[in-house]
Length: 245
Length: 254
Image 1 (cartoon, rainbow over the protein chains, first blue to last red):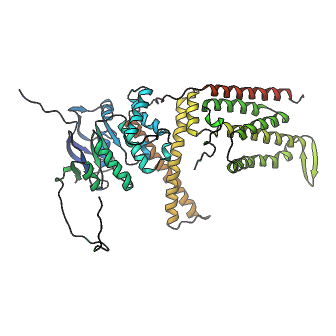
Image 2 (spheres, each protein chain N blue to C red):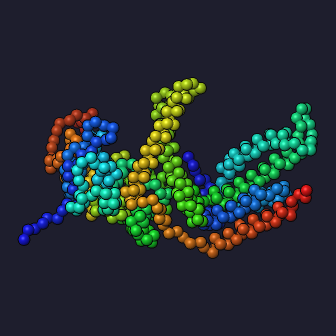
Image 3 (cartoon, rainbow over the protein chains, first blue to last red):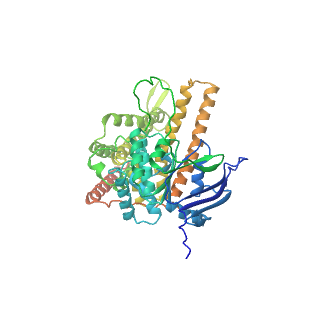
């Protein structure tokens, strides 16, 4: 009997994309698959990391290539609606993501859209907020939250839809060290696998098991993490000091 | 930017459901707007003024708001007595004051303030958010209600973006003056704010689509009206009836 291995949760085959008004493509020949890994994605500004997320979610259409969800090819808008139920994308800017007046309404928006009854949506939302340590935030007004609170609430709006894979776009940006630590703890405690875009290598090291980079328009797997040392210069470097966590 | 200084509190006005307050405010202000007798307008002002006192607003911001609205009525007092026509009352050098004009200006002032008090007591004691939901539950087209709520939500973000751009201009030595450079800079600021808001609108829409939005808003269940809400509604409707009766019986016979 031939053992058939389980298809990857998400697979990209030969994805290319170019912006309509640009001559050269932004992304070319991207091949990638994710089963149960927790992946970090790095790359310079403007290299197409966010674009890649938008292609996966069906917000942008790739010029060539295929996207497969558990081995099934995604083509039509209906297919991508399927993807959006299973994958959750956390935006760079939480203000784009939180559009409802109160926190509870915002978190319940997704569950209501995918067919939960108002009572179910309310329960799911309350328990998701509780899971993230946001008890008592239900009736808070979204635009009056602090930047860090907005980020965690935005994560709650995604988690309330119980996605299997999280795509996080620079989640640790502009967070104070405490909220950053809190986010790391939350991400490490979740069951979902994730792909995180970040320039914060320490953040990625604490939350991911593999690292990919966008280099020369394509996606390459980075070497496993290694201990390294290098000489560097500090003002007052002879004093005892700490480096970033 | 938009602060809601009267929306926090614990008076009976703050505790009532937004729906009964909207209906109450609508009926009382309708009666006051249609009334055309001064005694009834005075009575209206007294009634809504007492409602306002019962809602215990913060005195300083209350005075500021009343002053703002009366800037408009001040203009009526400057123009109506001179231009409305009718019986001549007195003459100060070449200016002729007309009785009908004064009558009209006082009526409008009383009505404006009466309705204003009523809105402050009933509507300003709710947040914009709960008013939006209240309107929706009263059966107003859902799209209009969400337009209100979304505008309210995004206004802050757009305002912040505008402030950020303006600060950036200031930090580079921009001082507004009556010059072409100033006008050009402001038009760039407005233009850039508009473009940014547009882009933001698109991103918000993307965020909604990603969470399964397909053009229809599904509301979360909201609390039912309590017995006190019905009592409040009946009181407001009785007050409107009383004022209607008063304004009809005091109608000038002509």
